[in-house]
Length: 516
Image (tube, rainbow, N blue to C red; front, side, top):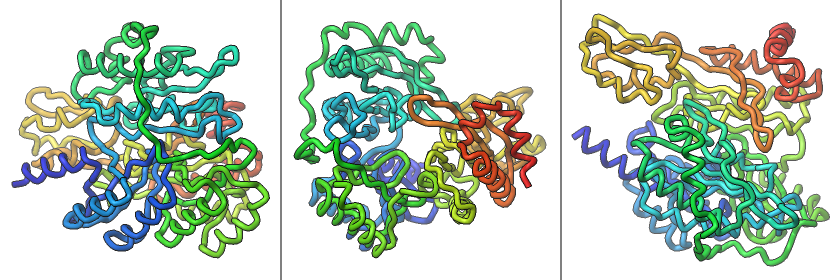
């Protein structure tokens, strides 16, 4: 019966319905249209959250819309209501995910390509049969606001070559247990060549990829040169695909207008506020809202002269423009309600947000994010200050019977069998705790648990991963360390990434631990 239940939830996951730790509760992942939803969509979603869930929507780091806390018995009704406005679900597991996109050259003054044009062609791959998890991103310029170099397996980054808009391609990006910065594998491709490049990737992964592998794993195993050779084959032939018709209609160029960013701590927006955002997008913008990676709703195409009026309307709904303080504070979606949660970061993040206000920090280049486990859905590795829940396992030798159930569970292959007993290589272990949950005999136990803290991460063009400065801290210890870091950054009027660049991580730690 337990196995049947597991298979049932695995099937739901592939459809975009993700199980929560709470009994009979799931989340519904909605696929936006190139990371945009119309005001009509948002109003319908607001109604659904009130009728079937807990009255709020999540803007996520996956650039999709998630309704949490839907009872499993109500899923069919939720899907039927979404269908009335032609909304479908995003997916999870070994399949093609929602394509990450930023703004194109009609909206963003820094964009050099029509990234939406390419993205709409690549949407054809969303329904392609594929047995590997793959994330695809398209950025309008090399600022790479969607961080496709690390958040996607295949990232197309807009470049301009002698006045011609083209794309460089990065392969291998991922965070999670073994972060990997994507490698540039092609330069100055046209749209059709870019489509052919992606087709080559799908074909090569189906031929050579092993179960559970992503592009970074393939590069590590096969080698960069071989992967690059295979993916660049016959690009000159191109691949003609008709773009999937978009419901987002950019009526006119709006590069002289502004993109309004609304603060949404943890990406949470309740139904009333969601309707207000929809109203403002319709009244002052072009009727749609963008879902960015930092989880703060964005309304493009706003006349700067209307900002004062909009600010007043937002304040009346309890919303505020992200125009002071630090960047939007974000975390993993579900905290303690996630089936893989180790430490719930949400209460800690809310405390930190209050502390930012008390300190009077005003530097939006400072970013803070977290994850409840090393999967790092909140991508702490590329934030100025980041932390995630971690647990160190240990084998209780008298209880280990050598069943080997823990060995395939470990995604970094840190567990081997020696003399009939499980042995964990703690240097290779990433502290995810899956082996503890998998052992039916309680032979793998929790030795230490707490937050791992990283500093100095940075997203975008000059990507860098944060460096570990502490591990297995309690919530209070993590708060105090973060407080020290914020105090230091206020004194230096800089970001952690810039300060680490300037003085090095060891000197940074000395400065940090001397803060009083």
